[in-house]
Amino acid sequence: MKKLSLFIASAIVFFASCSKEAGHVEPKVTDTFSAKFNGTSYTFNIEAAVLLRSPNISEKRLIIAGTSTDGRIKLTIALWEPTAAGSGVSLKSYTIRLSDKDDPATPEDESQDSMDGNLTVGKKLGSSWWSYHEYAENGTINISYCNEANTTISGTFQAELTDLIDSSEISITAGTFSNIKYTVID
Image 1: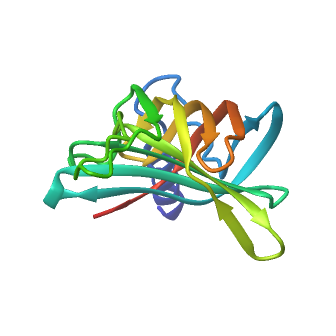
Image 2: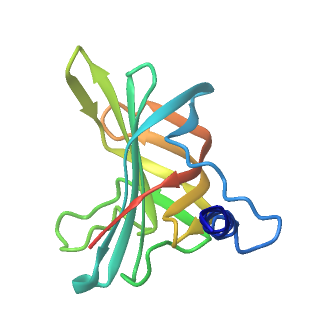
Image 3: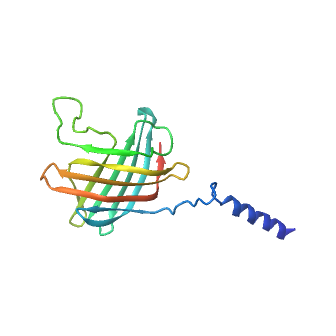
């Protein structure tokens, strides 16, 4: 009887662990993402991946932040949607477009002609300091996969950044993240 009970319990565990779709295998969760900065490839260790839901202002923001494996660059990928509903984001292309054309005489921030998303870049200064500049940004974040039940997300990104202080340029290409696990915070 004990053998039969053990067999039944094992069978339940085995079949319960199978995916709902025949042939579908859930991709392995990863803890890195990658991108090229001016043609040089970097891998980033993820420090945070969160979906912040704000029902009081009907908005949610997905933030994925990491530091390059060589410890020299911090990169944050952020996108937002005008709803707090759900535990994921839409599968679509999010526009990154920030410029330096803000009129300080108005309450609006005209420098943002897209509220879809942005990239934040930090560069290491010495042993413990980081430099974050403001950039005019032009690019996209493409979300190709989002599993709300497992809170995992995949996509690509690219952008051209122009430093608003010294006019230096950063070309971010071939940005990719695959099956990143994120935490939902209300």
